[in-house]
Image (cartoon, rainbow, N blue to C red; front, top):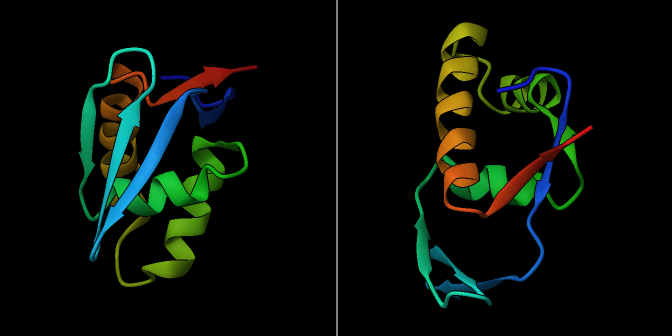
Length: 92
């Protein structure tokens, strides 16, 4: 995980909201991914590319009662999961 690169949504991923939940469908494989309560706001935040540090700052403002270290660890785990699924990509 790079602290200096920027994350963005991968091309060819379609959103399908169902009530209060969000599913992503990959065009190339047809795979369906359900976003949990942490991944969904990350996906929303990546409408524009962001670095990991920018995401930590954004989530720190939204969740001031949570420590920056906890946010960083949770965000890093979620970013890795989204990246492993091919839903987001890292670029410089």
